[in-house]
Length: 210
Image 1 (tube, one colour):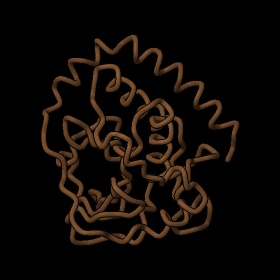
Image 2 (cartoon, helix red, strand yellow):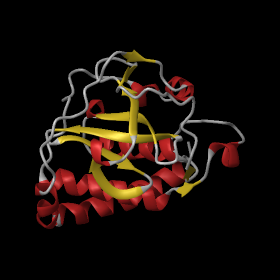
Image 3 (spheres, one colour):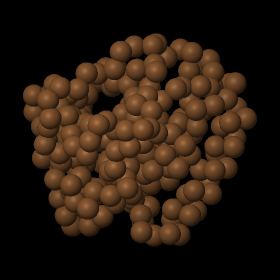
Image 4 (spheres, one colour):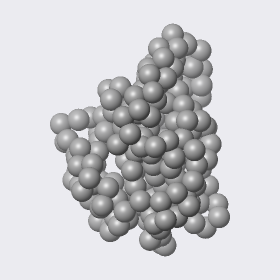
């Protein structure tokens, strides 16, 4: 892992979080506009993306499930401001590039260690930093969808007391899952190191787009 990139990124994120905390009142109106809606209901067990399995072999702590952690994030104005800030900061900081262009492999999941990544790398880095800031990793689940182009895509689902919200590198806007326009295929289980189906009929082999 490139300590330099992550160290510099942590510094900018910490500064941004301080500003976000001071502006939490301004964010309250946006938070209040989010409807409290039921989240998507997981179904049967599903096969994970192969690159996720490899990722977990190298980053076991990022995949671990602690059932003592809360299963939902309690959205306060300060927590919401922090999530919005981290989402925007990572979307701005990481250079988008497919794994084939960058690493000459079809699909690889990591934490964008050199500042370059594709969709899943953005989301894994967001979760890493949000977990460092105190949010329960168990309530932040990597999720595979089919996007507007009909391609496999990875997003980060935040399971909250206001429903399931989606962090995406394609937009800075955080949306309830059913307003993204995506077909939701599967996501990490909250109970074990495994994946669960979300009802989508077609499962991509990779999530290798930008």
